[in-house]
Structure formats: structure tokens, C-alpha cells
Length: 382
Image 1 (spheres, rainbow, N blue to C red):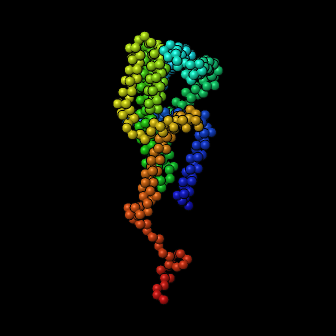
Image 2: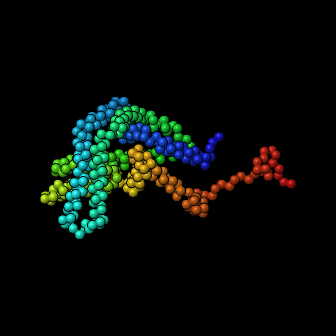
Image 3: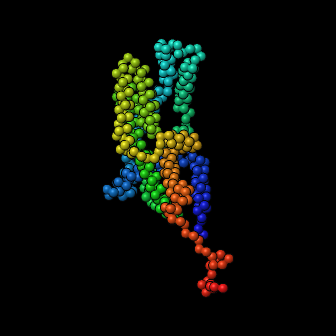
């Protein structure tokens, strides 16, 4: 027996609630699998292009895996050790920067640092927190065995999951499509196509922008000789996934370090500021329009809210799935609004009937029981 519209909605809501509950309960276990799925989704267009050039799916997947493994090994041997060392040194130097800021303010604006004033308390708080971070960073190098194991597990499981999902991606999507109720398969395919368009335009494009900006900032800051330039540049590039935040935090951090390092050389300070100005100019006028597109349906505020909400619920796993879920919710929400604005509730009874025509009247029953009579049993006249 076919389910009514209301029953179908209830079953879909129950299934969605069960899925969210499962993800919440298994958040710690799902991380490498979700990371592998995200990596496979990101690389699927490249595999399709290789197939179009005559590669088999297995050969295309193997080629991509070898290429990604080579890049990862190079990064591990060259970038990761330098990044960890600079990050550790930066955290250890944070109290020194706090003392330098206090000394500068005392010399130039002594009236600001009144005894017990807000500025003095803020500087003392920053210095105390910086010292806590330094101690915590040093302790974590000795007591972070479990975190190291989790990180290694992530590095081992994620590429394996990505390899198998990438090799079977087309078959998996076809299989999932076969599970969709046939009455709604057209609508589901349309929504899936829209969601894929949003993700392709935003996630793939924005990640590419982040990689390009991170490489540019890190290389340029190291060339000008800025201390911790690699850490600051990569950090600014990676958090550029959140619009405007990466450039603001990265620019403020690098200029702040440049003020202490190049105090007597304003040309170098301007050079550091110019690096971020060039990066933002290239991003806004070339990278984002070409790689991301003009309309992806994700407002920066909505993106930041999604990251905060899912991050607080599921931790790092929530951060990983926040953007895809926000994009999917946005597409479904816009589809629901379109349906609402085409329906009777929005247009009103009179306008809806004028455009759609009056609903057909139900057939009148032939007797008081409501059931049609057999033609031979009809009676005419008295």
C-alpha cells in the first residue's frame, strides 16, 4: 500500500534524525571516513577527465593516488617539520611580544597604562595566556601520544577510504540513485544536481584558492625575511576558507610581527603589508571569480554560523561536514521557498485558482451510501 504524503514526510524526518544521531554518537570514528569521502569527491572530476582521455577507472585512480602520495611525502619532508618548528617558536615567543607591546605603550602613551586600568589588565591577561600556551605546547610534545596515534590513524585510513571510494564513485552514485523512491526521483536528482553545483563551485574552488593563497603568502613572507613567515602565510591561506577572516587575521599577525622585527626599516613593514594587499587584489579580481564563481548560495555569515554550530556539536568532524551540509540545507531551503511561492498558501485562493484553474469537483454519488450504482440499476423518473 502506497504511503500518503504526510507519512512519507514523517519517515524522511525519522530517517534524518536517526542519521544525525548516528553521526553524533560516532563522531570520533567517522572522521577518517568522512575525510576520505571528501577527498574522493574533490578528486572525482580529475578521475573523470583522465577517463575521457582513455584511462580506465582503476588506472586513473592509481595515477591520482600516486600523485597525491608524492605531494604528501614532499610536504612531510620539507614543509611539515619547518611548520611545526616555527609554530613552536612562535608560541614560545608570545610572552616576549606581550612585553614588547607593553613597553611600547609605556613609552609612547604612558597615560593609557593607569594602575588597574583596562589596557593594563588586558596586557597582563594576554601575557599570562601566552605563557600558558607556551607551557601547554611544550607539554603536548611529550604527552600527546594518543593524539599522535589518532593523527597517524587518520593518515593511514583516509587515503585507503579515498582510493576505494574514488574507484567506485560512479557505481556508488548510481546505486544510491536506484534507492530513491520512483515518485520523487526527478525532484531528488534535481536537488542533488543543485547541491553538487554549489559544492563544486564553493568547496573545490575555495580550497583551490586557499592552497594558492597559502603558497603565495608563505613564499613571499619567507622571501622578505619575516620571522615565522611560513607559519603565518600557511595559516592565512588555510583560514581564507572563511571569507575575509584569513586576510584580516593573517595581515594583522604578519604586520604585527614585522613591526617588532623591522622596527627601524619601514620599507620592510610596507613590503609585508603589500604582500597581503597583492594577495587580496588577486583573490578578489581573479581567483575567486574564476575558481569559485559569483553565486554559490552560501553567505559568509551563514558559513561562519554553520562552522560554529557543527563544530560545537561534532568537533573537528563537524567542521569537516559543516560546509557540505550548509550547502545542502541552503539548496533544499531555496527549493522549499520556490515551492511555497508557487503554491496556494502564498498566492491565495483566488489568484491560485485564476492561474491554475479551479480544482475539479468530486463526482456526485448515485445514492445516499456514496457508492456509484451499476448502470443497469439506475432509475430515471418517478
